Length: 199
Image (cartoon, rainbow, N blue to C red):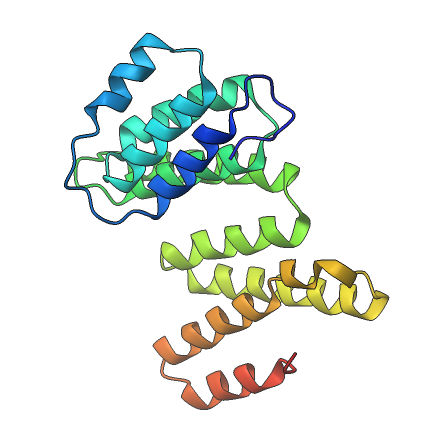
């Protein structure tokens, strides 16, 4: 959700976006949200709700448009930059996409912008996930290993402190093990899983 410091922040809309994001059933009519956006085009929270709804409904092109419109207003909001990159990433797999190479470059360009404003480990982890999603395992492995190195360095310096829950080492470790399993190296996957100490 957009930062509380932004003017026009409304807790009710933030709650609506959180609930709508978790809702799995799409049986009810949500055209009212689009009508509301047409009435209040300057509301970032309504636009965010529409973008999330379009993304969850697999209308990635519309979601991409709404997210980029929001990024033009809030260029340093990491969540919005990540949403733009992910929606562009989903468009890569579309059968209607005639120029996938261009889409990949755009997606990674947005991901790079996101990584510049996000936490270093988080930015690297999401880049690794993007490589993993596209089947570029050799690049994903390298990025996951850098995520683990950052986690080890922070732990050695005692830099995690209260933010230990924000460490992405376990997730990176799990995904590395999945890559090993997919390539048939189950013994290596087992070693990777056991290498991370239990908290």
